[in-house]
Image (cartoon, rainbow, N blue to C red; front, side, top):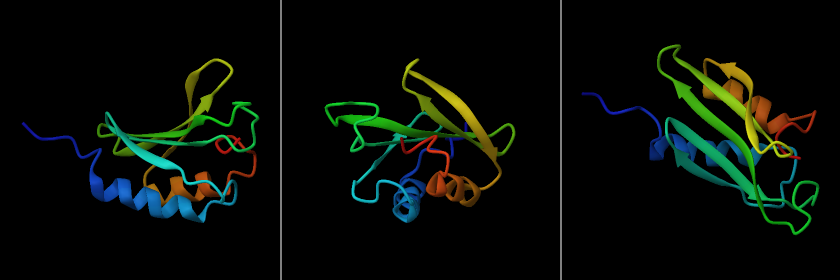
Length: 109
């Protein structure tokens, strides 16, 4: 029996370092949390768009699909309280680029 590749501490720390290059909400310190098959990013809601109290909100969910050998990147639909598939990537770097730029504010709302 093989252990799942994700989550692991090495990639969790890699994600923490990568999201420091984000263009939005650079003044908050997001947390990367291990979850089944991947990682979840959460952060304080400084914009107060999602949580008027400024509480912690979900930003992104990254799940590795071993069958497809690809990463699934989900964004949170806060109105419906559901994760929605945003995109699929072969490499973490591609996912970081999208997540850090976020020109359409799909993640960092």
